[in-house]
Image 1 (cartoon, helix red, strand yellow):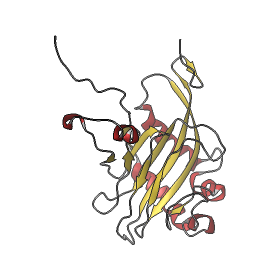
Image 2 (image 1 turned 180 degrees about the vertical axis):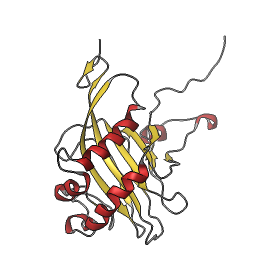
Image 3 (image 1 turned 180 degrees about the horizontal axis):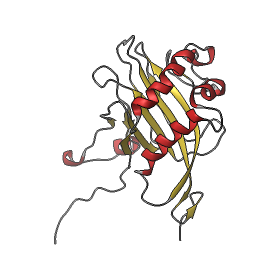
Length: 222
């Protein structure tokens, strides 16, 4: 009888890069810098456990100003770049709803607690969370950390040393990279060092898959 080991139930994440990141930086950085001290950005949303992270998550006004309001040149430029990157992740014809988009601005060692993106601010279910590293220095900025969703279950069992896995994975990323992962996967950013004049800026957005191949609204194709 042959013996083998098989790893079951993997969690897939998707990692690519935005082709025209420098162009997006030229468009977005001035807008982000103008709004990063807005009252609605300086105050983290209710329910967040972060310290003084600057985020536009809960400000519709700021997000419309930065990322575009309706069918305009800025919004089309941003979405076209993201859609092009996401297209490399999907293996069938697809259509998505990009339900929310916001920026996070780290400059003084800010951190963000472990969290998920299971639903949007409007209560809409989301399938994937996406993070674009718009301004990122891997030598000085903290990486995005992903947490093992099975860690509690593993703690109740026994594993051989040869199959043990880390409960926390720090993604190796560069400026311009874009990662997509299941919205239920916990992730966090640990406190970093102060980097005045060299902020860590990410653009986050949620994705709901409306069609995939012959499937509609996430229904299984049976």
